[in-house]
Image (cartoon, rainbow, N blue to C red; front, side):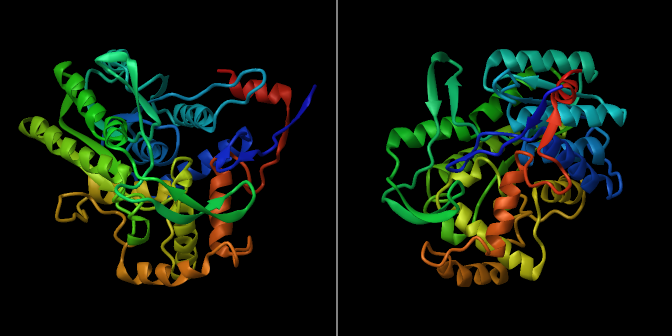
Length: 400
């Protein structure tokens, strides 16, 4: 019997390794967060596009263990192979399905490119066969680097994280070397704005709704929700006023188009502006990690810090299916209201000038929390979880 050691590897701000045992424990903890609260009425059949991590995974957990819904998650994750343990998302999908099935819940995973027309048709067939031909909820939680043009599969659109108009310089966190570094982003071209909109806007969301509606598999009270982000004033030049912000506003326009299509059957298309959290996608946005360090430190002092499962469970309980909606002037749900309150943002802006390369230390409480949450995304730094296991036990984890 061979003893295996799970060694953490961080390359820049990208994690290159996983600890399946830690991911299994994190899954159990997230499920426990939801099941500590009462069961609530919601969807019976939920489709989660991008349900392998962060907000998508949190949506699936609350749909299944909060509402009791049968769930299908679609996304592309790399499975294990002899020289590679697989991605964290692959394990998350697996551990979720195991936990859901043990609880008597229907749960399936489809490892496929959500942008492809054939994936949409495969999902429609699944809804007919396993969901009784009725879908109550679609969550669109996709952060993708590229998307194939459905009208010309030989062409691939790529998303970029860039400002508009002028270069932007900010400090960002280098997790590999545990330091703050200065980073400058050049402005996006007109073409880059367009391709980012194709990938991160609402085009594909609309295509999903069109395909599902044409197939006749949407329940009369069907709801769909796309996650957006507004962010604070300090990250606006790179996010809100940059390519990603442009794409999010394109997604809002899509929400209006979808709402018009769903209204006659009592359906609803929602945009939720979510809070800042530690994710594999957000950590590469220059300036964002520094802001999160300050935010988390303020929240430790004031209370109110939420991780994705806390945030999304509250969103669905209170706002999507509850009667405590917080809505802005554009009709968007605003579960991020506490984070962006003047009191919290004032404290964050007071702290940010102190977070520079010259005075950065790894003892900062905000940094420690950010790094811990980042490591836990891949199963490391999970209390009580070893970094070793025998090969037979690992094989058993991977075997149905």
